[in-house]
Amino acid sequence: MKKISKFFDRFEDKIRGILSRTPILYAFIGGIGIVLFWRGVWDLSEEIGLSSLDSLIVSLVIMLSTGLFVSFFIGDRFIISSLKGEKKLIEKTKEEIVTEESELALIISRLEKIEQKLDELTIKSKQ
Image (cartoon, rainbow, N blue to C red; front, side, top):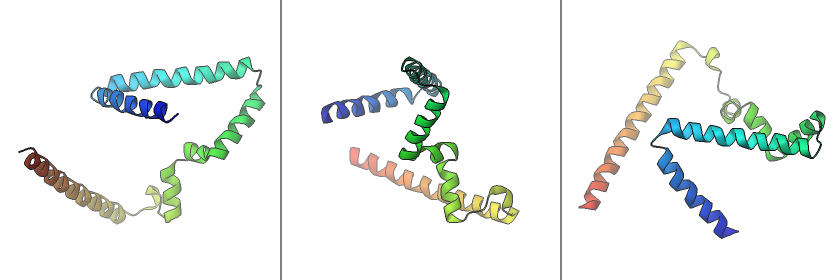
């Protein structure tokens, strides 16, 4: 089982590396995969005779037990911001928004400096 998992992990990395250079093609192929997956789930549920209510109950049990129900329909970011006690964008004052924007700009600036240093180290190590 580990060999199969390792194979698909490497295979996924290669495919993602190739497709990340062409985002429109990547999205198109991903969309096809998702639609075909859901078509298969839909057809299978019909073949085994699940009614609409049965499907709803089974899906709720699966999603609630795996933690996907709340995460998918509400979103992790919303939950985390609620736990942190952050305000909704509508509730924030103009000053708070400006402060957040300046903090984000500072973080981006620092990340760019780190990226430059990493590039310099990479060039030095190749020499």
